[in-house]
Picture 1 (cartoon, rainbow, N blue to C red):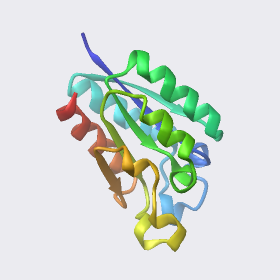
Picture 2 (cartoon, rainbow, N blue to C red; picture 1 turned 120 degrees about the vertical axis):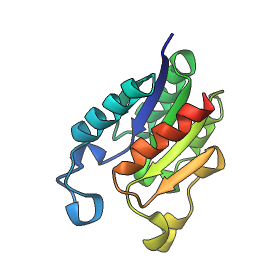
Picture 3 (cartoon, helix red, strand yellow; picture 1 turned 135 degrees about the horizontal axis):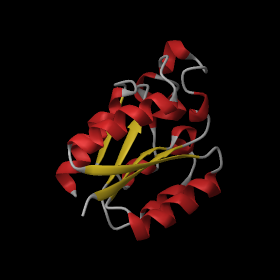
Length: 144
């Protein structure tokens, strides 16, 4: 049975490739999904890509993953720095969690230097552009 990895994307990532391409690159979220889906097939995993601009939507997606997924890769975007609700939801998930940030949050505004999600994550990948998703998938494959 092929293991499912849920890949969650937070607010504004639906505008990836359009919003601040100098910071986040030119690839769309659909481009990233296609690359990660192809890699998943190569390494014997399946992925479910989801995106929500809503904190509650992301919490609901994490709850759903509890029943279906072996691991979660999450780019919580701005909710990294504000959402205890997402941290609490991730704490109900039994599998590994990898946190991804396209930009290096530690080279940005000071308020972005702290992530609530990092307290739950087995690994954090930041500043590697959209390639961070593939790096996260390769790492989570070693954990599930």
